[in-house]
Amino acid sequence: TSTEIVDAIINNHKALADYTPSSMKKMLENLGYDVKPLGSKSSLKGISFEDGGGYRVTFSGDGYFQYHPDKNSHHDRAYWKISNGERGDHRYDMEGNEK
Image (cartoon, rainbow, N blue to C red; front, top):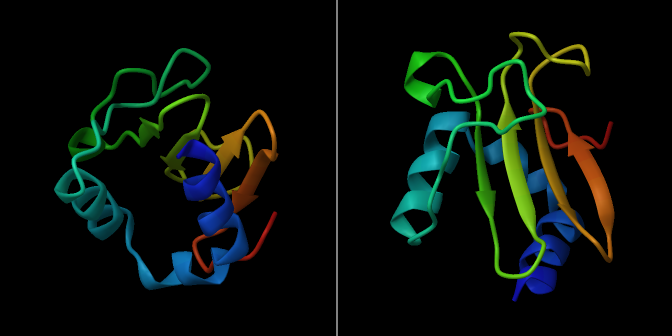
């Protein structure tokens, strides 16, 4: 479920350091998720990862995971974001440290 996925990432966020943006994207795609460019709130809206944009995945319900690159980041540098209605937004740097 969305909550289980979000909880798993939040509870094991240090493991995010084991992934590059490219390897995470590939893993998500291999797991069958539809990996899309960042959405309407991003200055990188619609720009593919391969062309320098970030990406996002939505899980059943209201779960959301994204990678945002350094470019145009509102949070000083590249980051991961995981969220849902129950747990709220959590951002992590590329080393898996909560921001």
